[in-house]
Length: 424
Image (cartoon, rainbow, N blue to C red; front, side, top):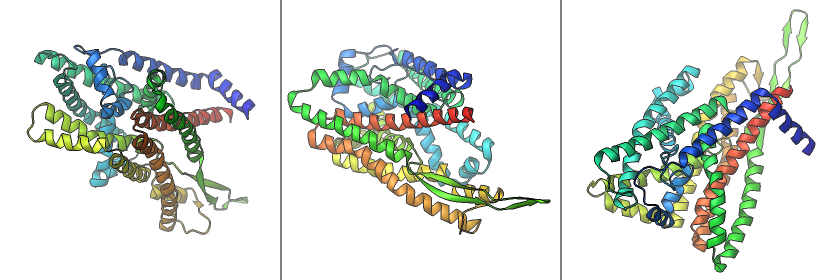
């Protein structure tokens, strides 16, 4: 196995196409990290550090910014606005039949239009989030009081930085390997690992050392579990009808249709976190600009997020719901059934057409259910530990760990697919 691994690594870096895709990802990461180190004007670094120490919510938000929010860089919003726009468009496929038809029935042209609308929707979301966060930070004294022109310049820089990251993510998806948005989040998480480890090593008290050791062991167990479940799949047998062409008869072949246990990958976690963060972002922005009644609503929602058990329960439900939701969008039994029927393939013992569609849909639902429960449980384990020990850093670290492991597995799987394609 080790010999086969090194052989594939060698092939990945000797094949010009795969090598270009890998180095393109590395170059995109370098550009992203360079931008994440450029702060906006007027930042008080001492107050910023104190603010992040006492605010768990912005620690979660920092995951989506890829570490850019911790120093208020020009890419402080990260890919959060684009993810929010994508969620709105995905929900629109359920509410509006025209959007669903554009996404699933109009082929590649419809999907291209769907993505273009998501990109356009990102612009106003990025501007609104920039205004909300900059107003909040200015009211907290983290950013010095700016003139209207200077404030508008900061808003423009932050919104443009988010759009630029979205563009880099799209380029990674097209010219690199894997999902560009997920890889940008992964790059930010990995970039923050050294600082996080040093903070734990130098600030941890003797009383908390057993908790950190236990969390480390639990992290290893979680990584092993995520790897095992991500590779698990349910195989549906597929047979092809015998074909007669003139005097020749082609015996029908047999294969299988793999249904992965975690069909949706890391996206349910990202969607669930985005939905939890969205109300606080909106209420924070409205309260910062002086909208009446928002301060009470913000205080109530802040109290909810501070309640580890309630927050964790909602997070678990959202992860499970988005797992089913995203799976239903990305894997359509009707389309699979139609493709099988067009190619003369069928599931043994199941009639082609509607019965095959129903059968595949039931299998996907049964397989997705334990996968969704597993993903939800892994996501809320850090909440349980944080509720028992009171260590808030574990909450952020656990979420980041889950995203990083899932994205890395998906990247390795796609690189392996590229290498196998060249081998054959």
